Length: 202
Image (cartoon, rainbow, N blue to C red; front, side, top):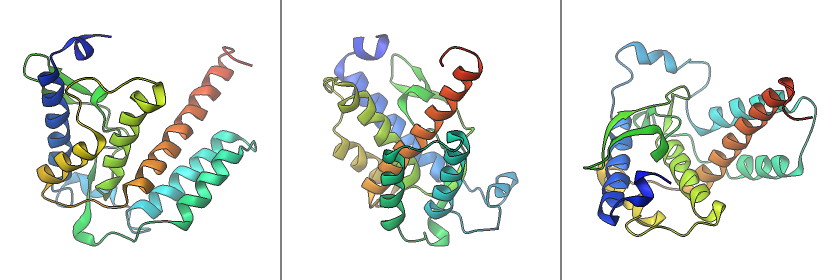
């Protein structure tokens, strides 16, 4: 509900196009020369391998010795199909939570006023953000049983919009979208833990 489903199809097209263009702009920020350089901790090379191990450790902490087969299956697949380490020039500033719902919009032009929710900021390959964007798109459509609205570009079209805006090809997005789902599920574990501690669930 809200202005997005009520909008003309052309406005939805503009929002997604401008949102992906804004994501490409985040990835073009020179993070090495100033205070953002602290994001490269220097212990391990930044990228998907480090992010996977960080998020898996976070998940295991949240599970508190519990287990679920789906997590183990996903982790085995992620580790066995890990993308190659990105070249130094391909390590970009990552938004960390790139999706339509984290943008404050101009509702008449479909352009971003502000990007929000940067608490997951890191550095790594751009596909880490694009995989999250695509996972959120899947969640709001296939994952929720909702048909794509008129004016919403297909997933392939969104990838093409991003690649054009970034001037950079993208690859192996299935891995990055699965990893995004792993991250999202990890976050849900911690939310449920908080609900349990608050007495809201057993």
